[in-house]
Image 1 (cartoon, helix red, strand yellow):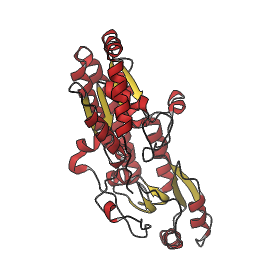
Image 2 (cartoon, rainbow, N blue to C red):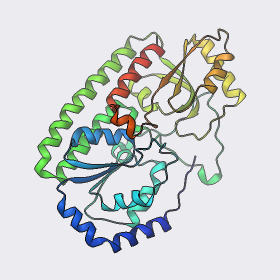
Image 3 (tube, one colour):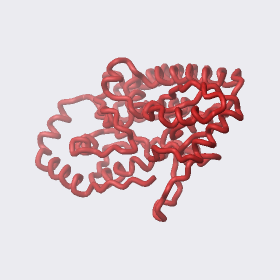
Length: 322
């Protein structure tokens, strides 16, 4: 998969708007004591919200539940980025538009937090496992791709939360202790949940997941030593599984004696239903693992958090591995 978004005209328009209203912009900034933080995906927004509480003004760009793989920024989004103090984003292929935007509108006072850069060598490449459907690439697209779903590791989440707290503390030193204390409390919750995952997997009779969908959970499975089979890689744009892919997944379900087939929250059950229909037993149950790629503003307002989703995923995982 390769996505390229041309932003030159959009960025030019944003720069023009900023030039026209610079006086107003500076006035607003001097009136506000809060940091302006822009986040892309829900997990980043939720970690920042937990750490900063009401001390920062947080903009969540994908708050309408748009998948990051298909997100295209508006002029308003670009202005938010141009004016913010801190920009926190995943940093994978889907965020290439951010690299273009910050180059076009440079700011020495803005701090960038790129999660994949923080991971460094701990970031995983997209993996093509046995039976997974081949993707069609042009020659230009045949290059290394990294799995962007870094938030689906609770261990990563703790690392990111601590780093975000450090950045906020540096930018807003008068509230530095507040941010660090909140991060400490939050990472303790993450560490406890990580322990629950480890215990659940250790005591499980099955150590393999079968996902009739794209697979954004590699960071999670790597954390706990699980193996998996899936229809597509995590960042795949494919939606239709071939006969060969379905046949392989059905055969693996029979071979491993699996009682559960997994999908993500965005996929529906079409592929899973077809896989089940081609097994010997034809009675497997479909479970949903939530990758948090469709969480929107209303969900967050109704109490959905990173922790609540991962706690729900733990219960799903326990059942899938039973």
